[in-house]
Image (cartoon, rainbow, N blue to C red; front, side, top):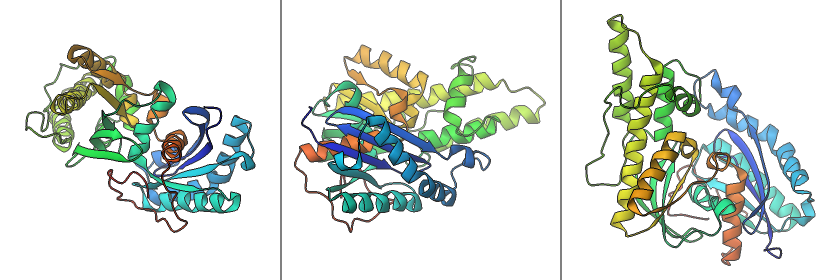
Length: 343
């Protein structure tokens, strides 16, 4: 698609300033400035710290993306930006920057949904999405099942977490086990030396007939198990706890995802979001999809976590679909529903 417009995407929904540039479904640049190290000592993301970091990182990260792609500002045809959901202050920085760039360059602006962008990004690696597909998004803030007839205009919520998101549970369990923040990669790493069947942790809502998730009870069960062991003077084998907790999470996630595929007679499953980088989730999802005759799509780990490429990818889809651009009055909506793909 050499004649497709060049779209620059801006992502600032949490702690990473992501800038991506795409032409059609071809990724030209994907640069990220993370403030994760600044949050690690607090054991979680501090919104005010994240907002300040976005302010400081925005201009140099945009310039780095242009340099990576070998482009100038004048080459950009459209700007896309995450308008929600996310941290309000962090979103405001990105939306304000996007409005400024769009106004200064005289190009259209597209405010997009962060979650829909996690679906759209897979196209940069695996080509156009099947229509329809089921998408499962799992991250620190979201655990969602979606029916996606068309990522540019039609995304339907099938189920979501009723309490802790999967990534949030990973972070909290990591803290219980004395592992660093963010917890996901550290639990994944520790679990490789443990057994996923060592401890029978509960599977919340797994057989309740819904497509919703619950991980709060699992998180509490892990904490209580560790407390009981320590109180009785017994050792805690971190790899076994990590592996058993991780197995409980991915068991529920994959069962619910394939349940959605069966219920809606869909044969393509996409998994996105930061937790999609988890090695056990990827392996179990592939195993169960193969057994069920479902085609699985998971972006490479670098495209699962928050990034500007995903925003640019969804922006490119909106341009190609002829969607009316956003106005310069678009708000930053921290609680934007998934059914709102663009504003």
